[in-house]
Amino acid sequence: MEFIEKHKLLIAIIILIILVIFVAGQNKTPSIINATDPESVSELVSDDEVVIIDVREEEEYNEGHIPQARNIPYTQIKNKVDYDLDTKIAVYCQTGARSHLAAVQLNQMGYKYVYDMGGIDNYTGKLSK
Image (cartoon, rainbow, N blue to C red; front, side):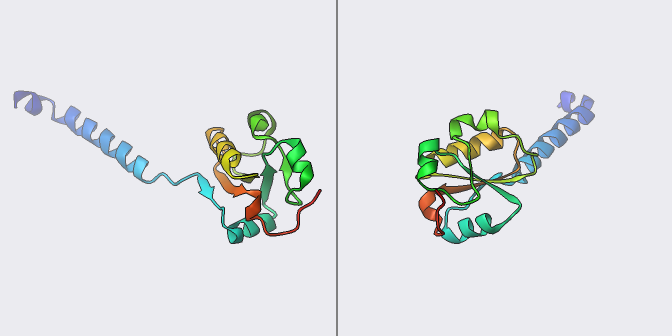
């Protein structure tokens, strides 16, 4: 009890720091947005502000891809993606596994608006070759 009486200010500061850390963690919004339903994919594809990245290998991309998609295999994301961190980026692959890995990596690189479109089958439009 004597310790508390002598160190009221220190204890108040520690409690305040803990509260700030807790509140900051509660207000954190998800930075990877799951957009795998066909309607969401269609909205992303039609938005000129969104960069669409096909994270499949070049051979897969050449078999058919979303028309405006840029091909950057997920293993090269770290080395080849160099947009402003506020750029909206949507990624897709064949089944959704690599797009998820790419989305996580983009998030770790500091991109604020990352959309995981899952697999190419979620896109209902015509593919380019």
